[in-house]
Length: 410
Image (cartoon, rainbow, N blue to C red):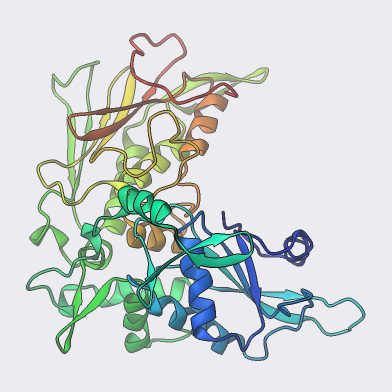
């Protein structure tokens, strides 16, 4: 699994451990084919970390002379994969070499675990075995195709959609937020969307994918009418009575902002014993509810257009449900550990913007937030093509009869 590598100490720890299935390093001048092979191999296995600026044999820190060009090589290598690999933006890490006054720059590339595609390079399906990148055996390839082998809805070009259907300001804000463009440069900003798998070439034109419209569209509901959040606050424990309702539309970034506003407005304040003191706090931990909303938006099945994401707040519970069941290797019993992204592009962009931890998806944090608030563990369940999470308002809440993940360490 790839790790967040941002410091000299972390780099040295990795180099000391040595190359393996989830770690590979190269000098700056590595060939595109070798770099692409390592990226594809990790993507088809358990993810990993690739470091540029290290001598291949002895692990000596030699650095990169042109970090910007090295990052560009990573993008070029990702483009060689079929389909294109959507990766976090490569990071520059400054490391001090022993015995030298001046530090050197390394480029660190993370390959997330749980990507939704089976990737090939020049027609070869590769995987990692030890420190080597080798063709997958027929058995491993069959298993991988069974787990992942579907064309993701988010990656399809949208009929009749054009670049003008995207919000230029939001595209530019995204590119600037992750440091991809230093100034107002719409051409470079849209180049980022190509690299992110949001735009594909159809004939001589660039066409937005469903992911692009969902993330940056002016009004994605023109193509996906039910790609919305239906939020409600009910006076009792059932879907009845006079209630507060809000139909949240717009692109996903706008929806998340509106949903957060709805949560802040409609969650009640309670007095809870925290340690030895009574403190005022929301009836549910705000960060946990926010995390569940982000998770629903990032991982719902947008190909299912018969229903919305639902956020329901009752007197005794809060539940969030989204169209689509768990996919890939993820089950109700292992969902806190297993990793699989139904929508890799959407998840990566939300990760770039700080909404979601790309490698973890946040459900483990939800469990911890709820535990610290003194509430019952969350309830996770699948039914009728829907995934639902329920939070309970107090420890004495009744009626918890759904399937819970392994919370032995709770």
